[in-house]
Every structure is written in C-alpha cells, then in structure tokens.
Length: 178
Image (cartoon, rainbow, N blue to C red; front, top):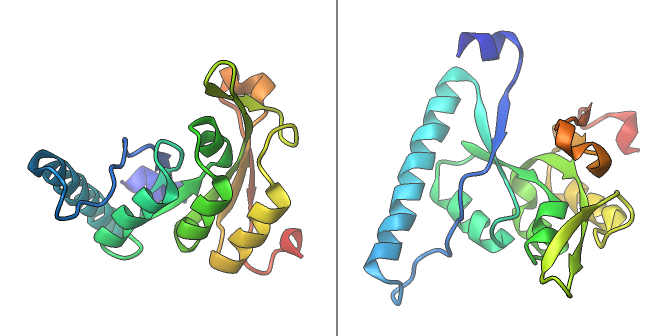
C-alpha cells in the first residue's frame, strides 16, 4: 500500500503456516490439494507484492528447511523471501545449519535468536544468544556465501514479552560484514 511504500518497508515478516513436504506419487489427494492451495495463495500474495513493491518474508521454524525451499521453488521467483530464525528452528527440533544451506539464496532477513532442546521436557527453549546451540559464526559464514542479506534482527529473550528487536540493516559493502 501507499503508506508502506512511503515508509520504505519492503518486506513483511510473517509465518505462512505449517509447510508440508512437497507432494509426490504417494501423497494423499487431500495433502496434494493442501499443497496446491498454499502455492496458489502464496503466488497471489507474491505477485501482488511485486506490483506494489512489497514482499512477504516467511519465517522459518515450523518445518524443516527443505519443505520451505520446495514451496519457494513452486512460487514465482523472488516473490517470497525468508526470514531465517535459527532459534525457532532449534525450538522445533530442526537443524539451523542444514536449513540455512537449503534456504540461503532466499534469505532476506536473519533473526538472531538462540535456543536449546530440553530433552527432559521434550521441547525447545529460547535462551540468550550464545547460550544455546546455534553456531552463529558458522551460520553467518553460510549465509554470506548464499545470500545478500537485507537485515539482521536481534531479540533479547529477557525482553521477549515486549516484542522489541534491535535491527541492523546494511548493504553488500557494509563494513559490518568485513
């Protein structure tokens, strides 16, 4: 919309829902239809965004990277981006490194969150950056080989209830990346 363009907000970060695996010959018809509906809806959103100068950045974490990568391959190129959230992937039991290797060329935003798996409780927990299992030096190395990153968002888990983030926006030649 006009206000969004005036504010120079190019990407809108949001979840796209649980992304199922890409259907194959053994997929039930109802699951094939679910996949097709998701592709059609995201195609419409992506094409509309291209016309008005905005783009949806789908957040990672509710599915492994290969599921989201297959979905992105099924919609028009560059119409949907990725907000890569390693903490959310870890919380849900997925490998952040493997997911980034699969999604790297689609990543427009990198959400700096860390987490650990609590095996006793069978779930993941967000923790302060550096205290979890996310290997940020490795993640950033993989990211820089695959993507032109637009923004890095950092959230303090102690302030998560406030939904506040520190944002770092830079270009390819930013000294922050040297």
